[in-house]
Length: 361
Image (cartoon, rainbow, N blue to C red):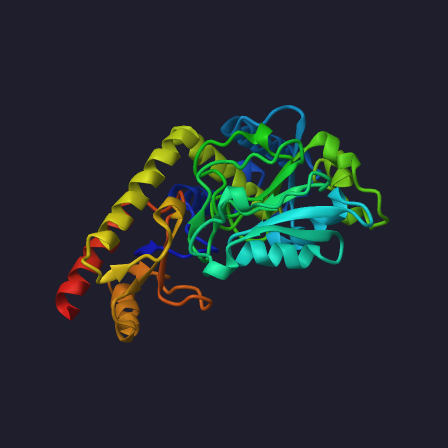
């Protein structure tokens, strides 16, 4: 077996140590004679796993006690709708800051459940930069403010947490959660699809300030109500036990790597190396994003001649570099540098880019 360097935007690379441990434990977990996927989620063994995973996540993110941690399903897309269902009543308004595809989709999916105020958007500038703060039209009566700290497709990132006053801040952190320390107390709700920095697809981690759990006033099925999930320790229905297990292993791996401060430094080094290669290529490669808003996680880039795209993708894959094709919405290339992508992978990519430019220049 030969594992290649995986730059997929999601489902994305998982730490090899996590995969190897899961492989060893697949048929007989904890000496119980069965796979973790075959055990009752209400049994003592799995409940212990779930409690440990939450404890490790709380330690990694320094999550305050007045926040609930939920392990849910549906992908982040389901929660685009579920969040307004839980945080807003009939006729309420919510502010949306839109800086890319996923923020745009979040606002669209929320519209049936809340009056969406598009408080700021950089769509008119093709999502190449962040909208200046002095242009934001925040509504002080809004029930929450939603934004996407890192846009996976467009490669745009907020490098700080916006100040929105006393209105709860809601963040879709699917592509940047656990990439570095974050002050959870600045947020009312954080949610993230697992398939980038947490584990396999099919799991959503949601962190919510407990007072917000009591907000939902509209009629809805219990399965959509966050308060009911919190009251049942995320086991209102049968959870994604495999995803929860792998997330727990990933949290342990992150602790072994030195925690989120160490991951921030590694991720900064990876992004700096790749952006340096792009900017230093004399225009052969280009990243169109305003440097002040460049993502440290998802790096889109183009070649000086789009006719070379197919050659670049074919040759890069042959060189052991996977999933570099850019999203269909913007084309070009994209390298996603999640926690499980090591610096050596970026070195290999940068070396290939230099060699490709030399051969096809």
